[in-house]
Image 1 (tube, rainbow, N blue to C red):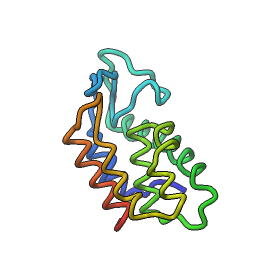
Image 2: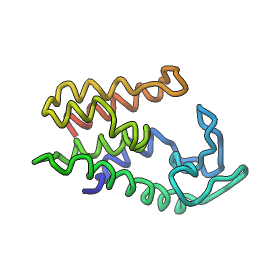
Image 3: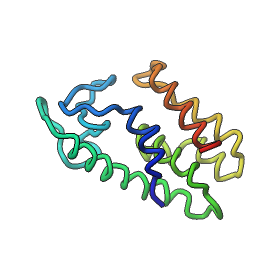
Length: 150
C-alpha cells in the first residue's frame, strides 16, 4: 500500500512544514525539507544545507516509502486495512519512528480489532523531549480524524 496523496497533502506536509534550509527541530535534531533527518537516510543533513522544493518533494516521497513498507509489514496479517487507517498509521510512524510504532499499544489495539481504542491512542503521542507540544496535539487529532473518517 501507499499513503494517499490526500493524506500527504492534508496531514504530513502541513504538520512537518517545508523548510529548504537545514534547522534544528524542537529536540535539537538537524532537519531539512519535510522533517527529513540523516537517520532517515540520504541526503545526509549538514549545517547550512539548502535545497529546492523539488528536492524536498522527492526526499519526502523516498522517506514515506520506507514507512509505508514498515507499516504494511506490521499489518500484513490483518484481513482488511482501510486506506484512511493506513494513511494515519504511516503519518504517525513517520513522525515517531517505526520502532515506536511497532511497539505501541495503538498497534496492539488495532491488531486486536479495537478501533475505538486505537483512535484514542493516537492522542497519547503528543510529546517531544518529554513536553506536550501544541503542534503534536494538532497533528495527532488530524491523524485520529483521518483514521476514523478519512
